[in-house]
Image (cartoon, rainbow, N blue to C red):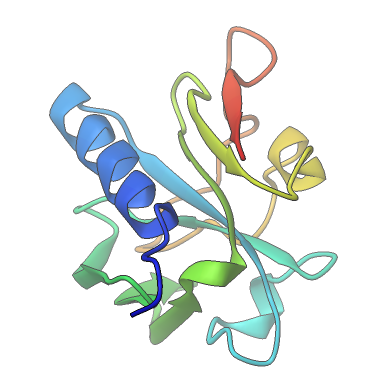
Length: 139
């Protein structure tokens, strides 16, 4: 039997922490051929998704993939993201969260101007209004 990855458990933990704290969880994703997102919102092969309970419907964070439906520009889309494509998860309001192994920096975090407009919500100007995001690298 193969060893289970800790990554989906950590994603669920940060998601739950955001929900319990009244914060908005954002998922940074490296888009590839297995990632199902609206390509018009992908920038430099990456997308940031607002996965809060107010922004998406039927969110499922499984051990292999993350799925939900969300609205982009008023149009509903089915989203599918392999857990392996997740670069990090963080709170919009304070930038706290996790960056996963091999993702030492996430340039898209410094300018979240596209790709996070689910449910008609405008993307934030930055993930951490007080300064640099407070992310921890998980190895």
